[in-house]
Length: 215
View (cartoon, rainbow, N blue to C red):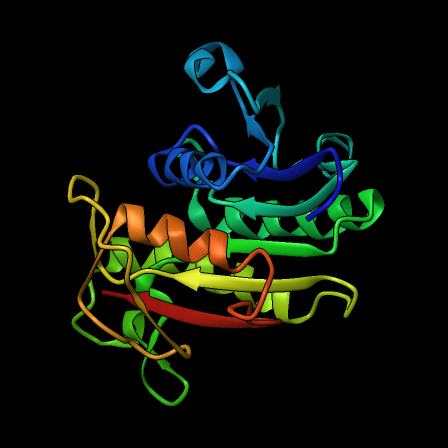
């Protein structure tokens, strides 16, 4: 990636977002960390990392923040808005805003419960699946459908970790990649961050599809 600012990370203040920022910086990439409340995440700013305010559900705000970047990562979450409203709104804004900004690569972090246990059957479709968790998962599923319907100019991939995302284990430097089916039970957060960063460019990149990653 060649622009002066390589990467923008939406949701950079969350645990996965922070891990992606750290991994990108470790690789020498220049990062813009986009968050709703920069005053709560001042520690993200530093050499090679610029902190900006952005409402990811606002396409104009996304376009302004993303202008001049080579690629974008979305690892967003809010407890304040129901998932079925938030994630579709965020993806609509990302599709529109990145298009306006001329950013064509988007790596979106998904949720394990949208992965398939059989062709066309998501984990959240199990009758025994808890209703509250299913509602959250359906928001991610709706966002995935919007990405599938997005203009061909947006080169997206949804990187989906397993249910057990170990936030404290050190990275192993290794992970497996599969299709939209359940792949494994666990991954270290540091390895998920590596998998997300690997999808930005190069031979590991997948295009306009959901993939699973696991240890």
